[in-house]
Image 1: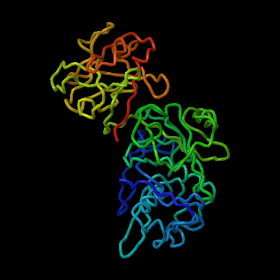
Image 2 (image 1 turned 45 degrees about the vertical axis):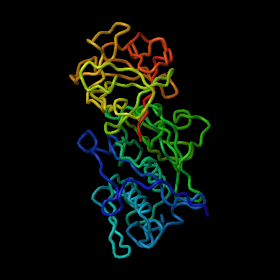
Image 3 (image 1 turned 180 degrees about the vertical axis):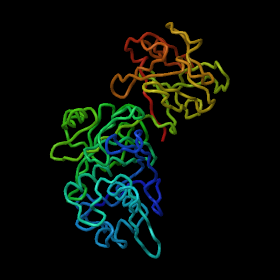
Length: 398
């Protein structure tokens, strides 16, 4: 038997090991509006390449989770911290809020709380095929190989999640499906239309490594391999992928608690506040990445398609000098005032790169003039031509 063990999660397994959850925008009517959740499961502990979860680790789909034969306190999942974290996500996905599963192991009580309620029957009864696919898709959607907690928006045919989008989560990351309870386990994903946008650590598009799922299709995108949800929800997610009928589609945004670097496609150099200055009007230049805080940025959404960039070192916002929109206008930093020249939008150009436009001139992109590779070269705005020197990649720092 080959057992795959991954990086320990940042979550704890004593008490409510599943972390916190946000309600939907529509006052908690999650069944009709999708649902926001927090991921952070860095592994599916003990997931075997030969046997599914129903065969190992003291977890059985033919018995209720509350029974000893459903989740054995002496079994494999309960024996380690990582295993208990996996159990916490299983319970979180399966049972609704207000329902808990408690197990006593070696005199210590571990309590796992339900949140999403995709398979409430599993609390006391068997988990059939539909239940297994629902829980599988949900658990896979919560895997984050960096162990970080990132807010996600989840869509599904399951009424516990439902269909519907949120302007706070504009990027369709991907869809997850399979059955990790069969032998061998089946754990799959496909890329959403925005898989390379709004990158967050440990997720699709961000150099994710060690994930337990694979893309089973020769095509990259879900739209080419899956069947959209019925009208009017065809843009929200998918009702089937191959033979699987229960799919969880994930939407995300830039994580406002994560630091990012912003680097040019042509030169490979990154946005840098000149001289690590903390003063207003200090110029923004390119420089080879050194890992210093004046090369690191926090990104937060102000309104749909409008973001502010704040330098980690100075706390100042990325800004266009004098609110000008002429070609050759320099970038600087300034106290955040919410003006249009401090609002930024992104248009994907392919391969994870963006046209990076100021709010007062959406026809422009920030540019390295002449594509010079010199450290310290000023970064300016120019009318968009599609040149690689106008394209940028935004990478989360683990």
